[in-house]
Length: 121
Image (cartoon, rainbow, N blue to C red; front, side):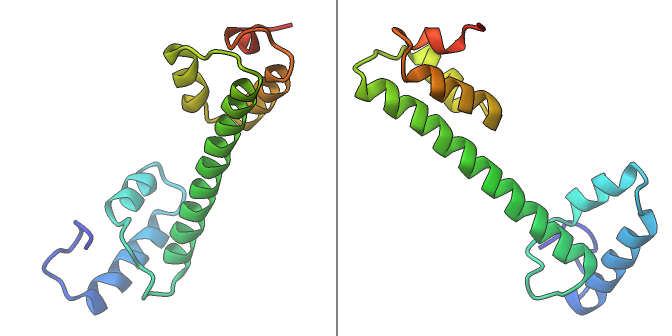
């Protein structure tokens, strides 16, 4: 349950939360408000709850795609028998940028070492 209006029944709290969110609009404090009310609102249909769910899905997809791309880089290096240090593995798995991971994947096909995928050419 949300930390906002904790003792207020959900049927009263949810419209209040929504109205405050709409009133804040694009004000900087709106982001803080969104974090305070970021709860499971699947039962509640409103612009804010729909936006929160969409953002969560997009963020989850992006994280999943980055994780898969990192796994692909490591798989290519492993298939080629290229050793990967713990430092290189952490750098690869910690990268969340799809373009960087795509570049590293292409380099992993021919690089003689795991560290070689990080060099700029």
